[in-house]
Length: 224
Image (tube, rainbow, N blue to C red):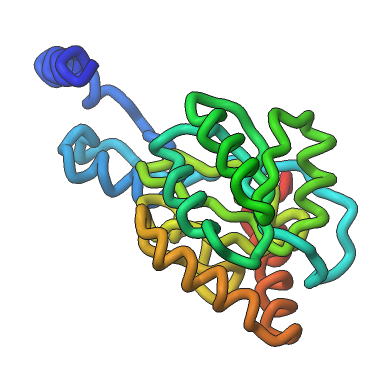
């Protein structure tokens, strides 16, 4: 795959394809920076960041109540599932996992072995929203360059802070100590430390994160 992608890029450079583009639109600043560093963007080509958005939820004010942390997404290596499971092993903090993928059996086994982990399986959008409403925070432990994490702004729209990897485009959405907390990608100890940090926060601090999540959604990721 890498070879054919490189070959395609080479051919289009020779043909001058990239030079005839007026504007390139990126979902995040990190993606735009990567393209700028490759030299694909011609001097006359404009580049702008225009993120995705999600529909508004029935939400009035910041919420701090929640019984568990939640992960929603594909169960794959690059999504940081092993790091997530390792961080919650032997913990008192509760974790619910929703999704499907190649690591489904690993997640199911971790849920069977640990009383603090629950595997919800593949849920409908409505059930995901309901499960997220009952959570303290969303965990987004991705270990690869995400183009855009839709589930992050879904959480924000519900007033849920996000605990996420400090990687790629993610920090441009999850602002540490403003609408969530960041940890070192692929580092279970770092994630465990941040989970404990969140649980030890005062209600006023959690309210601040929830308010930050709502404000981020309204300002940058609402339909308007």
